[in-house]
Amino acid sequence: MIRDLLLVALGGAVGSVLRYLLSGINTTFPWGTFAVNILGSLLIGLLVGLVSKGILSPEMKLLMVTGFCGGFTTFSTFANESFGMMKAGDVLQMALYVGASVIIGILAAWCGMALSEK
Image (cartoon, rainbow, N blue to C red):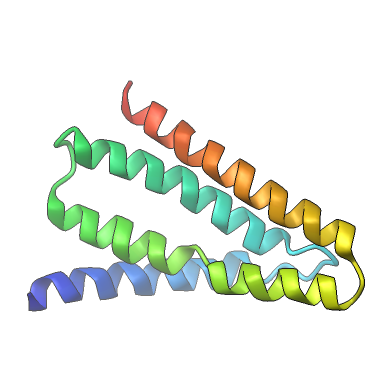
């Protein structure tokens, strides 16, 4: 159990630091958050596919899927940025951000799963 927690913590720490570095882009649109969530969706699809094929171990799933992807992606920042757009009256931009994030995120996860099949 302690080993599992350490794997999740290590993966989460690395994922969080990378998210921090990548999402620091200061623009009027939250490109950093969008990018980490889409990249994370692609990666989680790929990793889950590899785990399901037995290519990656359960320990790697804890490290990479639960830990790294959990720390790398961020739903709370996505929600906060979306709310900020709505509060500022940028309803169209918010709708585009939310729609694109969900649709492209799901497509990215699907692409990751497809890559694991090759």
